[in-house]
Image (cartoon, rainbow, N blue to C red; front, side, top):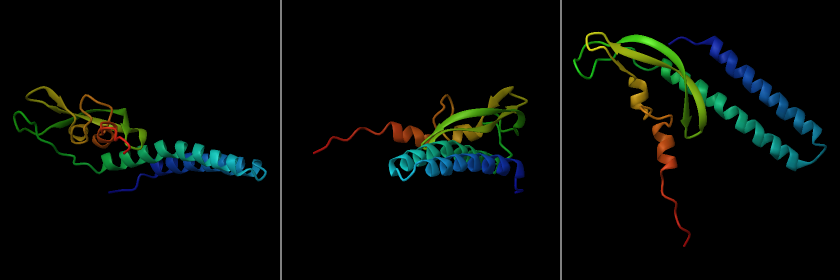
Amino acid sequence: MSINHKSDDVLLEGVERILSAYREACRKSCGDFAQVEAAANRAIKAIRPLLMSAGLSDSAAAAPTTYACPSCGRALVRHSRRKRRVVTSEGEATFVSTRWRCRPCGRDFYPLEAANGLQGSHYTTTANTRTSEPERCSP
């Protein structure tokens, strides 16, 4: 697998921008640790979608590149790609989704999304698990 320098640059530039804003807020806090804590919270919230998007993109790039049609068993071909927004257990993120087509059947498939609980949903399997847990009562 090759390193995608463009996506690395986007991630690093985004993190650098967020950390610079964080450090500036800390310097302007004049010893007020509550302001530092608030700045850290903002930075963590801003970095989270960058990390998740980069991670999902790297994972999608490492996914299999050959699939068979569930109906007829013939090889699927890449049909199109588009940016897709998803909700993970760590927050919102984006990745490039590939639509696969069975030429003989004329049907489209999204194997990567199916494997991650994203068919008909924006929520990954883990995000669904975390949001569907029953609330526990305190004794």
